[in-house]
Image 1 (cartoon, protein in one colour):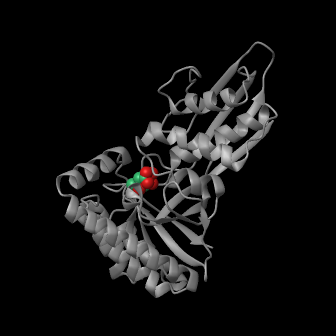
Image 2 (cartoon, helix red, strand yellow):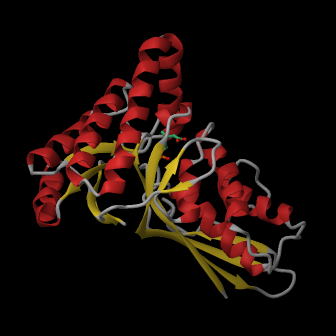
Length: 310
Ligand code: PMV
């Protein structure tokens, strides 16, 4: 039996602007994972995928030849790369990562699945190869992904990311603590990205100015993160969120969670990921975590997960 897994991720700074070539910063959330177990089955039984936790209440058997299915596409890309016929194998997928909430569940499932399958056929993928495959699958989910989700999930390291440029690992001057507050509202990143594109097409100067401002915030955030200046990181999160509001990708619920976190003493807060729903992140000092967590729940978060960026 082979097992493989991949983490969730959060975008700390720069979502949306990263699609337009600005830098962004993201980090893995190692406590939330997608996992895949691969078990050999008798000759002639073929390849079977079972996804029991991906918003499905019952096990689902997926046709590996279906082209519009992300799981089937992942399988196909791995087998094609090694010119391998479908092996006799059952792949069981289990994920703790909420779907459509900005935590990269699709990329994490694809990464874990591709790893488990390639290991099972004796052809372990390099990180570069795995990243390429997960990026292809991301296109199915997102249309025009920047590549940040697959990169941070495959490498499982904090990254400073610029589209189409080599990955830069980020040095963390001092570990910092985040609470991830889930609005419980699912939202499609693809739709938010397309709306920002329309906004930008209709008003290129004003939107271009906001995107540049986000790029500048990300650059300053990198310096603050490397220096371990937690107060500055928090202030920059607030600034980044204000820009995302102007790009129309926040929501009333996200803004409510943001206000609650800040009033309870968070050093900064912003939405994380595609927006319109999904998750927000709040930067807290260790001793404030319980108070901020409670404030988020009272303001309507459906769950709050703690993570440390290190
Ligand atoms: O919704 P998520 O977490 O998958 O984040 C997407 C980030 C965007 O910048 C909005 C899109 C992208 O492709 O980078």
